[in-house]
Image 1 (spheres, rainbow, N blue to C red):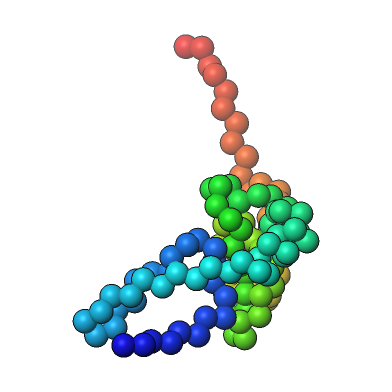
Image 2: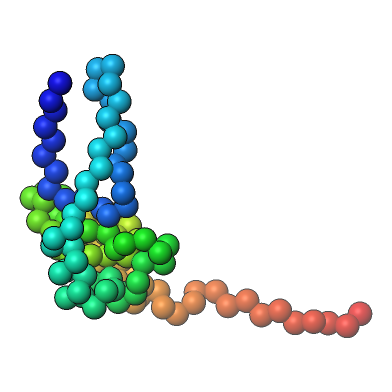
Length: 117
């Protein structure tokens, strides 16, 4: 039986989840070699957003546009997760920035004083 998959891009974390097809269980592994190394070199070996190496010691993740599959760059786990949690929505990311800028001053300051009894 021959099964064909179309994969636009994948994270460089090794194997994709197992896929059930009828009575078969398929483990799909995709390895991107050619473009990955040149992209990694052009980024200086670090995340395209924060400039850090991947903390978990793994390769950087291939970030791609989920709508059209276009590869945008290589990201560390944290930056890749942040984009995912924001659903790649620029308006959500702007609101997150505005929230951080607006709330940089503490609303509540707690002072602890030791009183001898």
